Length: 353
Image (cartoon, rainbow, N blue to C red; front, top):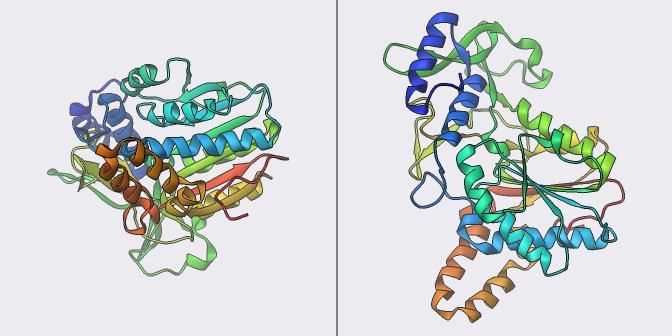
């Protein structure tokens, strides 16, 4: 389906559904986002959404300081790789690498990005990087320092729903006027945890196999090579029910089943699953903690005060950015930080240990 342009994705979906029947929510989300991210640069005031690195340089700087501290405490290994999943415009990487360089830490840079449009922006911000389609081609010698900021939320989610006849996969159909999600015909009772098996009709369970697979791969690489991984995203800490699928276009929430490929589709990240995967992968897990608490523990308030003092004309902007990143009613509580660490690597700062 990759040959279709985004404007034709609705027609492609309609033909596919007409020929082979309903498609899963996961299939719909994966294809829609693949076309969306290849269409254009979606970031910034003129795009559809804004991420923390675009709000302020302080966000990337704090991550860079966190990684530099990891590297120093690990004995300053000579060969070390900085790896970022979904680097956006490269803003976070550029800010983080600048902060790391203050400590004479200059790791090799690897960016994992599937969007041609975003790779072009990244090459301007981080020209020394090597680009990859996945973690598999990243070198297997030397520790990895991995960052995934607002990456997992865009991976396709699988949904199953309880019906009067039992659990079924949630699929997408077209009723002649629009796409909509319905219960499919395939029984899914064996995929439901026993404690939730008798949930009332209408209950939706959501999972993200792609996020789980990525987390298992990262844990395996950290166990083999050493290093640390930092996940920052919006999500929840305890298992929950209900659909969290949402769409954003021009900074407004829109119907995720309207105009596929023209809006950013995301779902909340299950941080409890990330913790379980760390345990299964035999790596230590730190967090999750709220993004606001984590950034404050790293000293972002002091950095904001320093920037405001050095640029008085922008002091109000600095404080507004700080508030947006750390306040509980902004990004501070909904967004969370969680870290994996390989054997022998230090406990990362900001996680209360």
